[in-house]
Image (cartoon, rainbow, N blue to C red; front, side, top):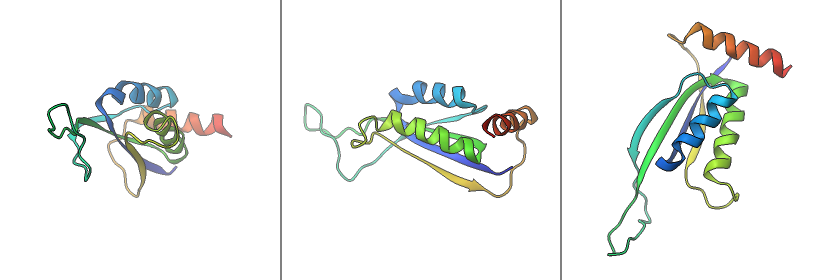
Length: 116
């Protein structure tokens, strides 16, 4: 079984919908970090001050095939019209993995059996 780490950098207001969608698809554990983005084109507020807004970073270890499904689902949340992105989501392959809950491995194996 191959694994990927999925990273999603999203606006804070999308944290709950994205985590709910990932859990529904089979993500067992999600690490949630708070962040602040810096852009080369700052957004202006009423008084001409720049405001970047808070961001959430979601990280999860998933079976490789499942990671693609979760990526697509989160992409639909951050870019619903297909043009204006409000975040970024990507996966990275994992070479070595330790400490993952055995029940999560069982869920991934069940996902693979159901998929085939």
